[in-house]
Length: 149
Image 1 (spheres, rainbow, N blue to C red):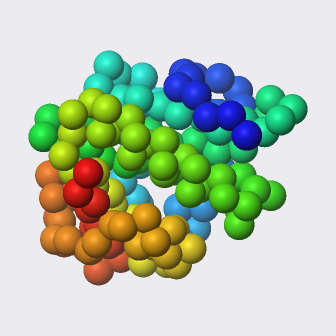
Image 2: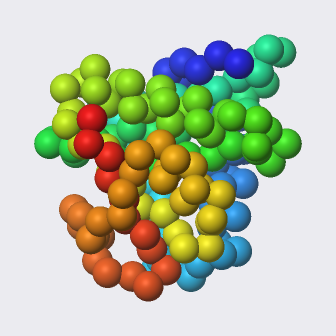
Image 3: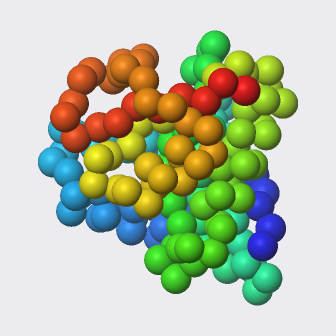
């Protein structure tokens, strides 16, 4: 697997983002979904990573948003067929590496309570639960986490 920075505006990636949107919409009401749209993902303060398998197919993605003082992990997704194979862990390692290389001291995220595999991945990677941050408000369906870098 190879992980590189790429544009999110390409068919394979847009397909993954659409599947992520559908998955989140099935789990949570609209007011509890905090998804970045394509235009937001293309801004200069966002680093977008794509994981590709040996054949070049996109199998996962994640975004690092520089919030000025901390980084935020957004749009983390792994293709259903690749889950449990370490793709998410490797994407998270790359996001963490880029955040540290950017001089960020903290990496934060918001995830939903109905995604136990994602929560376990973040906890194994050293993320701890925190109160809402930035523009987030308390939501019984959301978990907020951070990792000091």
